[in-house]
Structures are given as structure tokens and as C-alpha cells.
Image 1 (cartoon, rainbow, N blue to C red):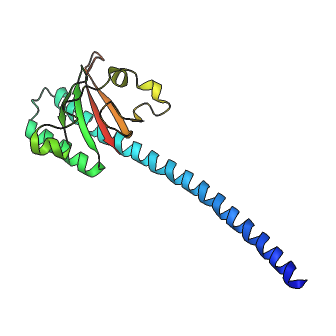
Image 2: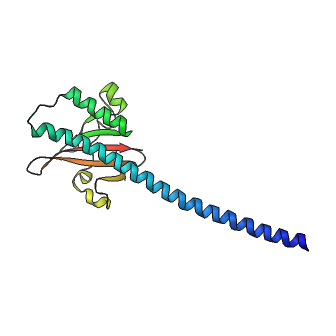
Length: 167
């Protein structure tokens, strides 16, 4: 009798512990995934902002951009943020990219792409975080984390866009 009662309580206690641990792991994984995604968005957005500020500084002082140094800046920011950074013109055609293929061949999957104008013009449809979202951009097979910052003229006209992406 005692052994049967012990088995019953042991089994019940074991089931409760396993269910509790499973539930705690689900909560932990949800919180961790949200933290990682938020961190990724912040990093990508900061990378875009850094490039935009650099371009705006050149424009502010009417300086000619030294392409070699500017490209090195893009590569450095890309390496630090562990992302691909590319710049598109006002027609959303990619002009320059920081990915390894572009570094070696001056051509890559980004450089031959034309990004959807919807993404460039209407970032508000991507929720609260207006400059970072999850998308394929029409380039990737799987969704990537994407941050977007527009290059604006003094008359608030978009003349280019900086993208930062990471899987």
C-alpha cells in the first residue's frame, strides 16, 4: 500500500515539475527571442543612422565624398554591426554594398536589386518600430532583420536610402 501511494505521489510530483519547467522554458525563450530581436533592430538602426549622419556631414559642409574612405566606413560599420549595409538611390536601385561579394567582385545580389518603393516611401506600415522590420526586401529567400533610413535633402525630399540587413 505504501509503495503504491509513493509511486502515485512521485509520478504526480514529477509531472508537475516537468510541466512547470516546460512552461518556464517557453516563457524564457519568448523573452529571450524578443530581447535578441530588439537588440538586432537597435544595432541595425544605429548602423544606418551612422552612415546617414556621415553623408549629411559631407553635404552640410559641401564637401566631395571620398569614395574610398566612405566605402571603408561602410565596411567598418557593417563589420561592427555584423550586417550588410547598402545604399539605394531615389529610384530604390542599389548603388553600393558592404557585403563580401561586392567587396571582391563589385557586384552582388544587392547591387542588381531594385528595392520596392513601398518600403522606401511607407515605413509606417511596419508597426511601432518605423525604421526596422522583418522582410525579404525582394532580395532574400528568407526574411531578414532590416533597418531603413532615408537620405533627405534640405527640402525634405528623399534622394537615397540606407539599408542595413542581418539574418
